Length: 330
Image (cartoon, rainbow, N blue to C red):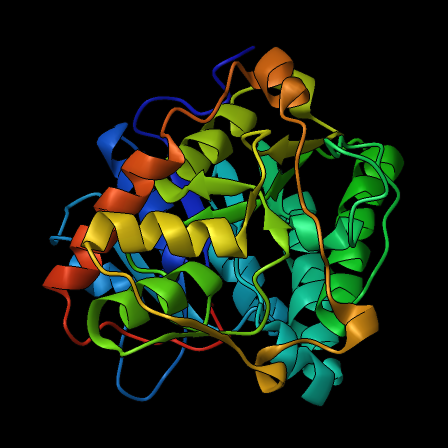
């Protein structure tokens, strides 16, 4: 492993106002780096969850759109590392507007790869997703698991991953693909499964959910942020896909039981068909193998599901009107 990023060096984080992005920005600032945080332009000059981070002399915010190649090139100039997290991520919306997902997730990633090549960026970290595997053909799912797009969202992420890896093979670009499994924690949108369960457990008369049977590998967000930084600092991760997972699976039903135990309630659970994905689009099991992350980057998830849930529940308790930021995390 090498220290790719010099102390105090400048990095660019795209999707910085989103859930994982804002935690990554905090972790990089804590490590002493200068952070250029890219946020999707909006007329209100809002910066998403970056507004929860205290003003910092080493943090600068850049507004733009990752589909604008000239703007992307300008943002990348002078950066040692690019952490590319910006994406359209809502799976249901990808059924409605797939062309938007291609433009943002696939072409947007291509824009950053070209910008990095132009400016000689030392490392480009591309954010993948466990959704690219589809429902498990075997478990735990390692990086050699077949890719199967079960939603337009997943298809655009597969395309982005493969374009990134092609730049490594074609141009020798120092590209690292990080593939997080199901990240959870403070600041997550309530459209995700755990925040949906938590907010209902705190205030509702029952838990309404699509299905209790899907299995997920839940990674606490601060562990995920550490994983990004560890992968960026490891030469062994260059040209590779690296899972960020715990290796422990939990069903949605078990999540409900854990949350209710922590909040001290016992509510009935109602499965609702209108909350489910189309049958062939549902990913029933995501359970990751994190051995490569350990061997390549000396990373493992350090927060138990129980402890992560307690921290997340406390955050939702203290945020009575949490943002439901929607699908766009740029």
